[in-house]
Length: 491
Image (cartoon, rainbow, N blue to C red; front, side, top):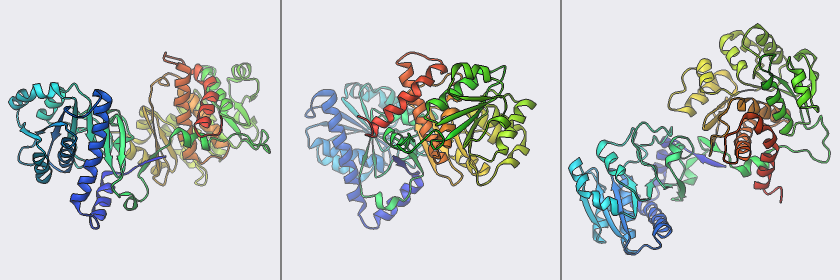
């Protein structure tokens, strides 16, 4: 599990560390980590370091200082280093002096004419080190810096963060560095886990500068496949169909029977002990999934441990009655699609929320807006506020899925592909979460585990070509198998 801390938390931790460790020592430690990664990249891309050409893109502040000190270390390895000062007169003085002592070149680049003058050096570079801005900055690259970056054709190593990416939200409001790799110090920041900024990070390396004891609990976490595989419930020797969890599915209608088939099939594939379907698409579900216990209404469904409800039930009076019956059961429930729209339209439905029972809401951005207002650029803050307001677990779908619980804990899952961006895939996710809730999984983890397995199922089903949502369901079991193998539970 990877944690990330907001820039405020990181700066506070750095302040505490600086009471014990001189700032110059910390900077040299950080810069040495940058230099080591730069040398690794040079060897990988050019076969060596001696005589290779590195340009440092240096702004004002400590990240520029880190780049300058890294340049001094690289000079000792025989690297040809040129520092381009994008904030002439405000470069870190000690770092600048260190580079000059080792024979590094320094060129001021304060306007567009000076960019043109250094264009040949940019074109000839084997590696660029981005030290333009630090974690206190916000907004896109300024025009001169953007022009410099646009002229690069070599790999880029970012110091702490790719300049132009918001460190706390991952937003990219304009021109920004797209790094090949990033070296950050002491702790990941939110941008390292959140898209679209995380797409600019490249390979991430975290350099230990002694910050760990000062950080405390992270502000958000990202699960890896090992975590998901380790936690995913599977039957043991003493289990039967009831102890594994019985999930009820209230989805679909005569108009949208496919939603019922997809959500129910996903619940079956996600290792439920038993799945009970309740709704008007009973014939379609029965013919596709003969192992499912099928009834025509929620009232007749029988005993379940959790519900998955909403996809395809409609937003009229019939859908509202179905939702009322599900919510009145007072069980852990995953609510998606039409259920979210109904909750947004009918505030009185919230009166059915037992404070001791967790609902998991899984909106896409449009549904979230109807329910809780605009998402904006800070997806984590928006989801955290919605979870606190509604006293629910909220999963906001997207290329980076964000899950928050009412206590403010946040889990994120950044997709490495977009194969699940297809109609009906949300119905599959609903069934998977419902199955995990029925097994007794903690609701926020159930949502995050399902999001990870859902994405992996899409990759396995697609195999490089577009798919429909129906192709996802058979791959859910395969995804769980891969996750368990990642956790060392299968050979």
